[in-house]
Length: 337
Image (tube, rainbow, N blue to C red; front, side):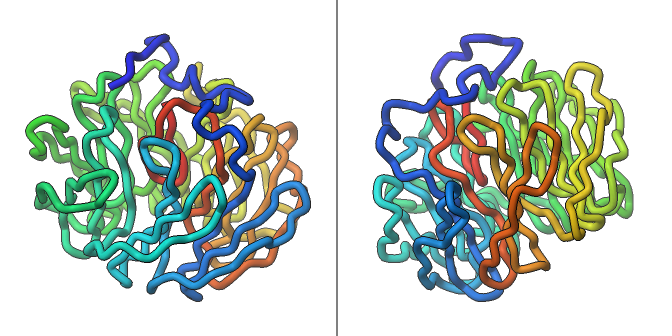
């Protein structure tokens, strides 16, 4: 994998405006998968207008940047397909048959695409270009979904949303090497590593906050209450703040990553159901889907005010703002290093 230049900040290549030369000239768009209407909307973030709209196979869940930054993959889990979008044009290609792609990640060395086959209880290791199946890892939990990787890429931690568990998986042996029950009633969602690699944060919709896990020892070390239905996690461009979407109460909590506590909370004007999203290139806007509201929110990261709402299709889920800073993509809606 590409070396980590700053061990104290794995996001050191994700700063404002730090776009890879690979994405020079790519259109700046917000890609929105509408799970309930089986479509993708493309929004021009400058005007807030939908500039393209197309159908995809059933229940698109996330739009995921490829490891090499050239392709965006639309994950249609019920439709058993990944739809490639040419990131240089924003135009979709023909669907690639893939079993149950609920979510998608890439190993830090770029060798494998990891398909989170949620209903099949598998992590499928695939060729990152052709999506041909190489290996399947059966997981001992329900709802395998969100993940993030250790600093050295040797392991990743993945959440299982339907039985309150998280797993630790070795990226070399492809085996589950750790299993943890958060609580009997937990519903873990997004996973994000701290800049120094010492803490994995895991959003929990039922515990209404974020768990802190030491990745190396694989032990719980803390819990931060954030709000009802804690769901998505996004690191600020300066790597000082973790944005937490509280889907059940229409708010976003800001965790200070230096002292691991909530420093403020933004309430979305008019309420809503903030879910998944991403930051603008300069980090001054946070784009989020309103999962049960049929809209996309654009928030100012200066003070949290709602800049605009954009009406989209039904059930908008894992939107992707693209391009974004970074040398390579680890997947989901935009986890870059």
